[in-house]
View 1 (cartoon, helix red, strand yellow):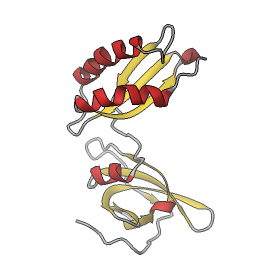
View 2 (cartoon, one colour):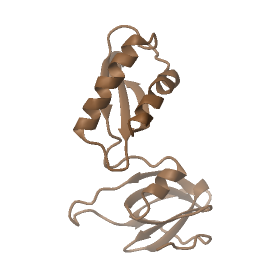
View 3 (cartoon, one colour):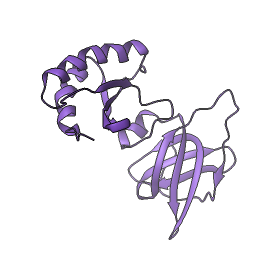
View 4 (cartoon, one colour):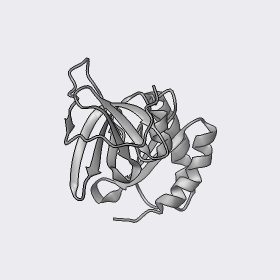
Length: 173
């Protein structure tokens, strides 16, 4: 599998994509033989198929002219998806008020999962409002993984496993 310089590819493409109004969410090398380059883009209004097509038409020639990706490759442009991972604080802030699924640590070595509305984002962590468990405050150091959660017309499940209250976050509603 050829190892492509992902950081340099990002540095090459990001100014152009930013100028066009897109955030470069992720760039990954994957697929059989590692010959697929996936560029995940985002924008505040959401990503359409036309956005993906536009970025593909622009990024392809830029990559082809660079010496960063040699030989044949497949360029794939996509959105981060409806259940995208939340990685940075600004992403939590952007999606405050949306439904999330959070895996978190509590106690010495226990883990829990809560799904509900991201009710608050603060310096000390986040608060998730779960219909059954109430408001659960989770410190940043205890957040193991989080993602947006899709609810299909009320069919989604909202539960908390091993929910425990934690102080420190003022609810923001």
